[in-house]
Length: 245
Image 1 (cartoon, rainbow, N blue to C red):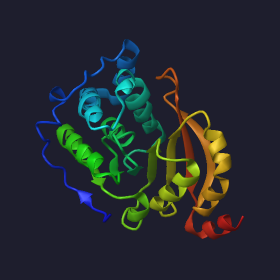
Image 2 (spheres, helix red, strand yellow; image 1 turned 180 degrees about the vertical axis):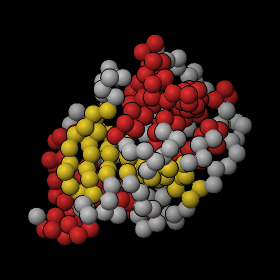
Image 3 (cartoon, rainbow, N blue to C red; image 1 turned 30 degrees about the horizontal axis):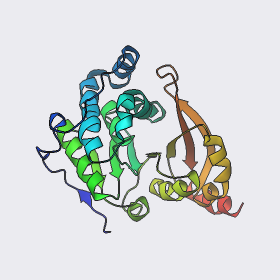
Image 4 (cartoon, rainbow, N blue to C red; image 1 turned 45 degrees about the vertical axis):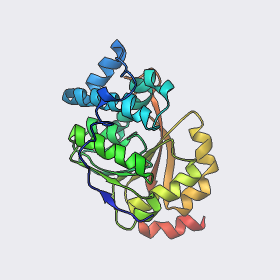
């Protein structure tokens, strides 16, 4: 597959209009609505439209399972958007294995100050992402139909995000090269995050990663805060030493 930066086509009327696809967008609970107001602020309507896309065309095209619809706000969109509290203002972000735009599109809505590169190899997902970006007017987002390891030479970012892509030992070699020795990797993980770090110790060192640790985001907003593995990129002068350890 050759890498390319996708231009976002105009949404196709038969699939990109939430009202024309199967599925009913969930209404947020009172707690979810309060959290959404805090996370998305004046852009909460964009978050609602994104949820509509997920619940309709996203389900129709197989990006999410139908059983996820009732949990879209808390488990997916808010769960991802809150990691914005771990990202500095105005930086450049790459989202590896974007799929349904989680966390990349959720971050783009919550944090318009970020420049975001969505990296996704599957054409049908790239097409859907482009349609949603076009509909929501997210001009700071670009989509690359490729694998992370293929675009590392042309993309240099400050933060790399991911969610439900692969085990950490596999994900680290894909993600760290995008940082080019400066920045941080943030991988949304579950309860086994600490165990994954232990198993990936060698892969982290070889990829030039340092100080792997488990962080949480959304502590005061979500019933279950988001668990994140954070790994810093070692400066290039320190990489060879770290790799030999």
